[in-house]
Image (cartoon, rainbow, N blue to C red; front, side, top):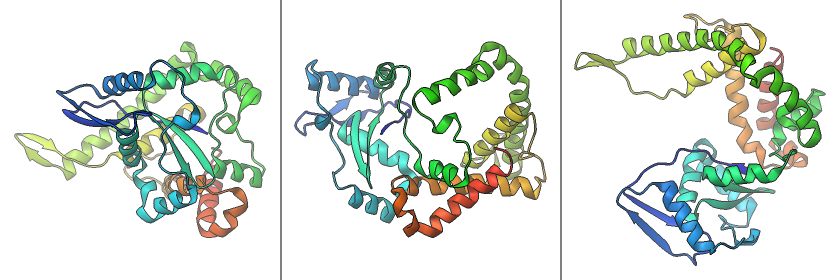
Length: 288
């Protein structure tokens, strides 16, 4: 399983980097050096232009079940991005992670991700989201392009490209996206004016925009795919719309803990799996 992190490359005046294969030597990069430049330079220096083996990739520990236990105990799934950032700073731009029964290779530099994509060919093998896959199979639902691999994925993706990715198709969707974006902006402006405080004649508010961004993504997707609004930005969203957004949030929150549990062991996680499957059932009832 290969995963990639596309977190933005940040600048730092003091950055500690541990490069794969450098024997555990840490180097401090001073003077505002771009993080991506620092990691790329150290990576090239460490490998001497030679292709390294899979076993040379640094890792967070080989005992996947102990790692998974630490994840659950420490609540790491709720701040996974920070955990990955720490590992990239410690282990370098490419590292392995064993969790449960799975091993993943995490990549942060866009140039490395691009090289991986180019080497995969026409039928890339993508990460299987087993909880989603299991739900589709147990409920006899079609898996859709997101859960397919190989020639089956390529066939569906080519059809999807013609419908959604061509410039002519994108132009058709722009008015729909613009409509949702304007409503989204009005909601944020209203929130700032009603909940914020005035500073130097300007309303100011610091808050976590994640819930609003999720609503924007869902509202825009439904409007583009089904030409329907579900009313997530209305002043009084319907109870059904609220139940829908809660179902999506529950599905997303229960996915990470279930990702690393083999299907035969799901029965030992009955409450978590029940919440996950029930959330998906509600989402599917909307035709998603």
